[in-house]
Length: 88
Image (tube, rainbow, N blue to C red):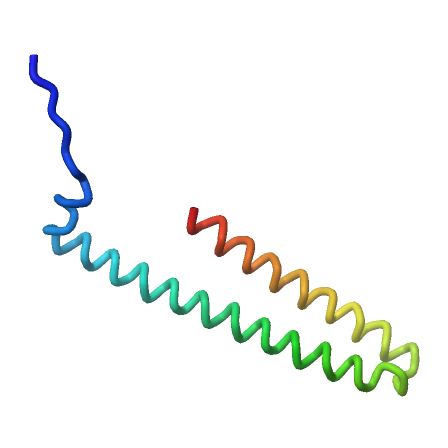
């Protein structure tokens, strides 16, 4: 009885389909990173605007804006958590 070991990475390096999949994954990763960065920058702008104008907002406007910022923050965290958990 013979037992052999194979280096799967070595074999996959020579398969064109594996190279295509790797390229697609790299492109998808770049898209996700860009989405996360855009969402984070948008959140920062919204928070800065809210902090600057909160003292002059009436309660009927300030409360929904505050809730919206919480939603955006949670959404950003969820997107980041999901992208990190898929990369494991």
